[in-house]
Length: 377
Image (cartoon, rainbow, N blue to C red; front, top):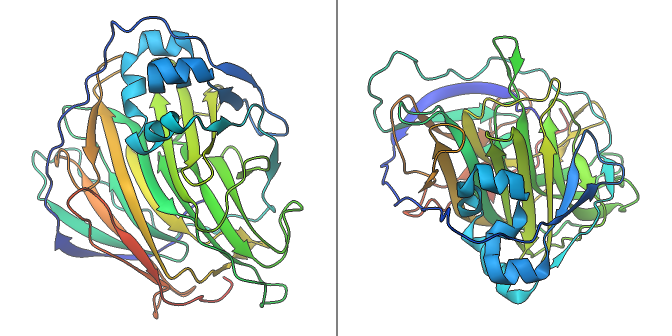
């Protein structure tokens, strides 16, 4: 969903530390192709991708990609996060055919003022963070690409899914979603920069698509071209440790995504070829907690205590088919780049803030602590 900006002010300094490159082995033998088929009820051309279990056991993350894509860009496999590949040894169950449903339609709140982009002419950039204030987003964004790279090729992260409380607010809904994403969702020089999101939702209140008055689910979204897609046959539950990733293959102009529950040992993944008006510039990455759009506005924020996140990484590439460089959030090149911490505000942009976002740890981990439900915007 689109973020709604309240304000932006300068903040503190964050150190950047480079993480070594993950080298892709182009000499790997052929891998059995994953099972790929059209999904049921899913928007656009999203296809379900279910890897061959034997291929996963023998070749790991290479089994998650179409052979032609992997041949054109061997670095794809290296961009699947360790938190996901670690589940492979547990022989997880993969959704064979996604059954999607569209989240309750809601008008997208209008963005007030776009975030300032880094100056294209700047030759250096201080290692300073900014803080963004939004009525529906919190977490971290990394905006811009340095001179040695051209786009973000992957973003990944992990978190604990909140347990939804029993409904207590009548017709109002409480919600909290967590996701990772690539792209901005803005229109840039007549091109819409699609934002690919993959994550989980916990909500309490009026039911969604028969899930019930309280529930949790996995989802993906290609904003603004496709509404949030609930994956109805992928089960998540409060307390699950979940890992998610979004990957952009510039060589094949395709978007890959996946969600794995470490607790349930269950995964779902998909791939969509970008055609027509679906495109991405992939100039930023996000690690976000959000309160959802609902009934033409924005829902209240569901109480969630403190949510720790981990495995927050991104990869940059210099061009289609080139090797990728992987970094922890809070590290990486600094030229033309802004690392922004986002805080969620009341509907009028004021206080009390709805949550607080911690500073980054040495490996890019951070936590978000609930403060206030706010009101329906």
